[in-house]
Length: 278
Image (cartoon, rainbow, N blue to C red; front, side, top):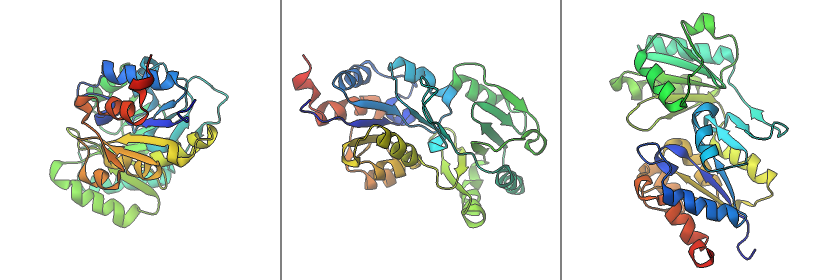
């Protein structure tokens, strides 16, 4: 293969997916072409397993997957693969929950892999999760203090609009040695928290070592602040046209937006697929 094997890491929302949360025909075709030529395609997302597995199957992947921004790295179709689950200590999580209510947030939600614990009943959030998960999410509703018995994979905070900066500053000032916090993209201003040191780059490192692919042959696509470490880690970091400015500044390349098949466009050119397609 004159084209050396590359590892292609894909964020989902705002990157591989259109705004309607679909994979376009063009993106799908080009990714299949890349896989046919021996390149490895992986999903690296902040979403839990249950909310990304449909896209994994749609692309016909047989590779490991990075969920929860690196807090869970596993192989959906190979149970023998050495999965890595790095939840945050329950103690830390409950201290953060406490702080959230002092800052008067709307709600807090904890995820233990695919189980969801919602602190206060909130139909909008339930609908969002059932929609995103594409199946019934295993919800437990009620105070996290009494219901959260295990270390959570991630915490999601739904702050009041005008409190976001204050909340993030508080998390940085008081909890920085234990946690990482990131903001979801619009329209949901949700703050996501994972254990300190977790990022999609951790997942990429584990997977690239597994396939013996050097950094310079890792192509990573993203659009949000949870993609920063991954794009910095990859030899070929690609920011979407719709990405935040901070990400564009660390990327090696910029492609079209998620609505314009930016992923497919870049891969086709970079791996020179069209000339060798048939």
